[in-house]
Amino acid sequence: MSTATDTSVHEQTVTARELTSHVLVAGDPGNPAVLLMHGAGPGANAAANWLHLMPDLAENFYVVAPDLIGFGQSVIPDPFPTNIMAWIGVRVEQILGLMDHFGIERAHIVGNSMGGALTLQLLSEEPHRFDRVVLMGSIGGPVTGTPELQRLLSFYNDPRPARYREMMHSFAYDADNFEGMDKIVSDRYKIATNPEVMAIAEKMIGTMRDGMNSLCMPPSVLGKLPHEVLILHGRQDRIVPLDTSLYLLQHLKRASLFVIDRSGHWAQLERWDIMRPMLERHFGVAGAS
Image (cartoon, rainbow, N blue to C red):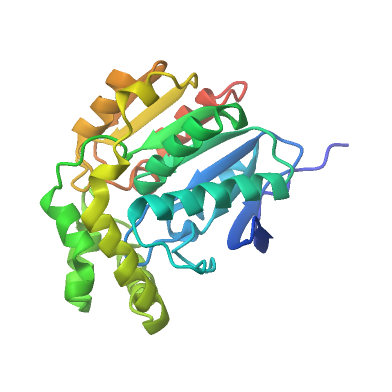
């Protein structure tokens, strides 16, 4: 008699490569691994991006979703990174260390927004450690700086609740009818304005504001990546413009782009009905519709 896979999500604290990470884990370690890289912004963490969908993916995969260094409960390194590329470099070491800790030789990977820029850097440095790739509203092309993105990066200049609500609403296609939006705003605002978090986040997001174009991956690098890449972008994404994904599509060797209607920057929250079968097909789940 077969035993159903435990798809519940568990929290762990892991130290690897001298970096201490708070990690969400779900699924059977014997299954193919999927790593989930969340996006940036005040109050961001792994749970906010991925908690609701991890049990679904855990039916077929071993799912690992860390709080990227600088966010959530992962520990800030000493010395403190002073620019956006240094932050990405620390996170590259974080993810490779976690893969070693969990015994993951090769993994599928999903990168959302800033997590997409991290994903591309991982692919360029350690291409043999990664199999199939999904990029969602990804950073990694030339940054035009939408008004909504500029407001996000300047949040700590005026961290009042009304400003935060305005910023979070700009992530969604239809915030007024987005189930759970009030809870998202409340929960993430508490994180974003925790005094200990603010002392770190204000400096870190300042490096993002001053160096976003440093995260543009050159065509000479993108064109060498051998991976099969599924690019997803919300048609109504106000944070990262569709042009960014078109740039990635143009320069990646083996990429497909799907534009998802009725979706802003949170496709994984607003259109999981569309995304789940697409991810499962891409990652090779038999019978995925």
